[in-house]
Image 1 (spheres, rainbow, N blue to C red):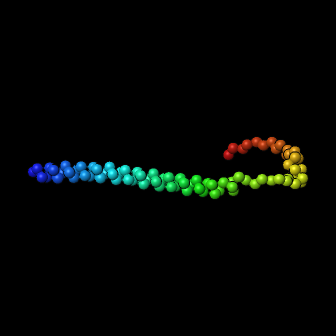
Image 2 (cartoon, rainbow, N blue to C red):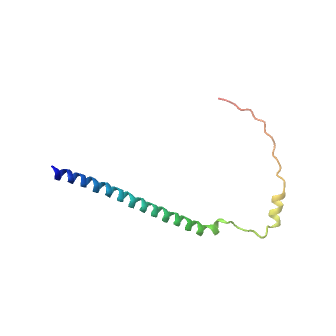
Image 3 (tube, rainbow, N blue to C red):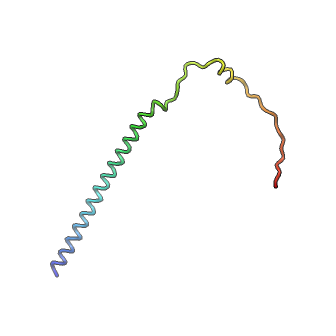
Length: 85
């Protein structure tokens, strides 16, 4: 009976230690994966950054300035009545 009790206690202790070690290694690997994914995201942002800054225009054609400066003329107001079915 003593052998069986020792065996069960040792098996429980070993499984507990194994579960703690496994949890530690899994968490470590997940952190490494997250750090690597974050680094890839940052690198991708660095590559895209020049494209996202936009276009710098040194000269605007006078015809565009004229269109831009014209006042918008309003249209006619149309009086309407809402009809409910």
